[in-house]
Image 1: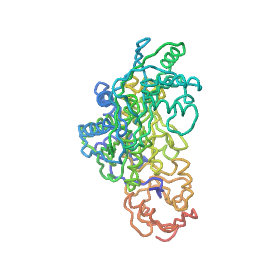
Image 2: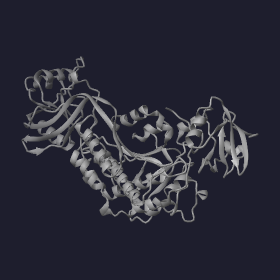
Image 3: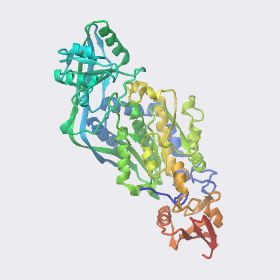
Image 4: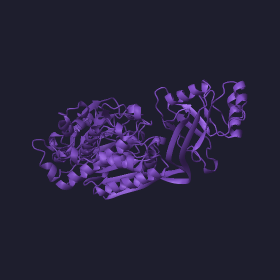
Length: 587
């Protein structure tokens, strides 16, 4: 799966479509690294869409309020995948599919959860439970009891635990089940099992955030049976204080969550707008469809899902009206299983390793509601991205909110280790980008917490992001060359020192035309120049990006003869990647 592309940028370009050619004005392909027009009618149409015409808010509402949280392995996630497919098709995208990436051993669904203090006061409780844990058998009302801190307190609880809710201030005193040890916690756990408690209640952190997590690695014949509740800290303290003061406290919980015997198939959702002359190459935009189920999953990752869908709608509408298609195939992708370790994207890459050579870049929106108004770019990428994103920068330059003004963020490497699906592609040596997001929202407040609902979403940011994603998809799909892979980060820099990593060191344009050279690259050492055209490598005629990439990657030796043409004159040099030399020779 690991690849090291042999040239800095590999792409075959053809003349622009009429719709684009009309917009080039004084900027020509020869003057541009990317071949993109400075004025772009598709981007103009996207930004001409008024706020009232945008549908991203409606899409997010359908997902979060209509379907709800989307835990991997839940019925909701499968429903969300089918809903997303229908949405893409409604926009006029024909190549849409749900593709299975694997299965989960056990399905899990939440339907309802409520809790109350019923005595000595009446108060609704704010709480959560871990995913893939049992609920209650209907409403269960019982006394609250404090977990013992010594043997005397343990002895006093004997005969009083049946149907009780255990209040455990920390793991030090909470019951431990089945460890086989003889500490206080273990003896308490055995007593709880013997008498039959309803469950254990623990406090949230001091910030009051109820974070959802859970372990999906279950066997249907050996499911967890104990109810464990994480309670909002202030309410936990109220209950604790009552009990310490000798007050009787009664609690009631009704938690409807269930298991389903697997295997449960899991899917990625894929929608593609076919390209033209570079249709075999892919540019991918998306986010993950799954969420934790302690809240609605509005920002993690309903925002990324809804902006991906809205971007697809905006782009299809503009393209249809102007009668144009992208050069590369644009893929919109919604991955599953991201929250459990990027499972959907990693599995897809394992299932389709042949695609990696053909992917120009993958751009992921998974940072919540703040606006995707920047992109991290390395030095070699900067000249290309300055051209590609120029119309987006221009359209957002006068935005009243500075967070909506698009900017390029210079960086030494691409954003590896963020923990989202672009990381899967970076690990496969494919350029993966995580949008730089700017705004007033506090993502940590909603991330995996009880607050991840639509009221926390900033709709102006959502609209701005959808326009950026749609415009970027169009621009990057039409560049003369793919996104470079030689400086994605430390890992790639180490690979550059690999003697098997073969690069020519050129920016390619139309018809294998050399648009520019890498400073101090082998092409420069060989005497190649702007305007030259690469003809063959190791005796094999080269006419497009795929042929050049496959030929250089497949070389079994450290050197090869490369022939190019300058005007009517053939020229050649022997490129030696191990010795890092390029010596001119007869064609």
